[in-house]
Image (tube, rainbow, N blue to C red; front, side, top):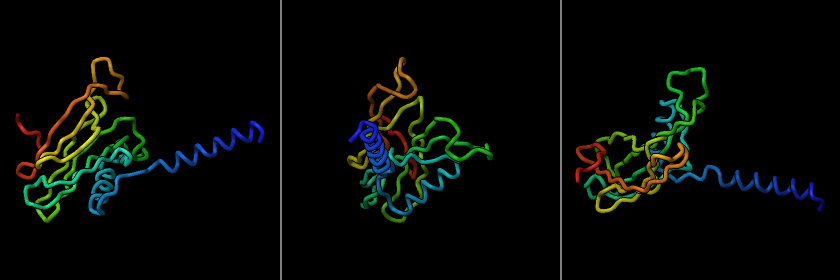
Length: 166
């Protein structure tokens, strides 16, 4: 095979691999998918589903496992009606949403990170507490690349996601 054919084959293989690895989204319930879609549409943004993080555990203290999702929306266009949703800049916001395992009051979504603030890296539920590992921005970090490791805990208190006091 000539070098041009080899390069074209490599380019084709790279495109196939990129396509197959794109949109590997954490599976959610249909209610959770609908919520995130509606939230993104309302913000005139798009969800980066590759950044989704999912955990399960009883965070509402009702004895039933809940679904906890961290999701990221990008390029919010707000009131700029002429722009394509998701195309308005490189700002992103990360949100935490709890979907109770049984019928209970709706728990509002909470913004937990954004470009320039912090990025969520991992989520788990331990003893009814949502625990996250984060990266925060150091004084010399570029906006793409926070480097300071941290942790943040959240609990559901009176139907709201809050950071507990120490």
